[in-house]
Length: 342
Image (cartoon, rainbow, N blue to C red; front, side):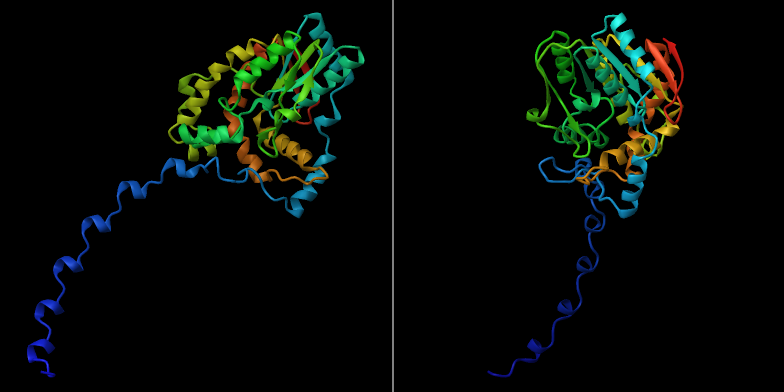
């Protein structure tokens, strides 16, 4: 009873040879499903609840820190426009009884600097004036991430049409025009978020003049046919179908009520878009040249970032000289070359 039978020691032929089905995987196991091969578009945008750092942020390198310190002393619009030009801008606004004076121009052209100079001069003359930027009305990062998931991933980045809180912008300008006390929103670009209302500037007394500046002011939408061909590497690689640029072009129409609140527009007409990456890099260096040594974009990130603005910046160069009440040509060093009326 302890010796197994011969049949039990010799495995059967069936047990030694696997079946054909066990050696050949099924077609379904060899070919992944379409869903497994194509990533979910939403997977490219981080969950707004996750603590993801700003994708445009970079840790400053020693080389970039040295460059930024050098750029901080480079001739820049922070040194200001000529006093007689600033006085002309203020005098024209007062002559035309302007309540909201718009200042448009490409990134880095000196819009905020000119607005601040006019405000200072107005205060020296005993007037109450405030400066406000379209940038201060950017949607928060969480809201833009939601847009990126719902519509297109590129909408997670601030800047283009559709990334502003138009209701807040219109409401703020209306309150200032009507002489009501209001808080002026502020956006922290290095942190990529709007500051909490407790840190907004308060306009308690009625103001005589609002300097409202922004790169996009009164730029009209492009013709649909102009959107077909991609304009730069960002559009070719991240928007090959043209859906994002078409959506932004359509979103620009919603800005019309905000543009109607601008009484008069001055356009700082730069030499062309080619200078914008350098201008924007100078801005970034100036913003980072602080004792806090806050993070920001490196040069490569800046060059990619300005691609988001290129299409409408070129549209601004084509159209705003005829739309603005005054167009002022400036060179690459932001020196005034010529001024004309629209």
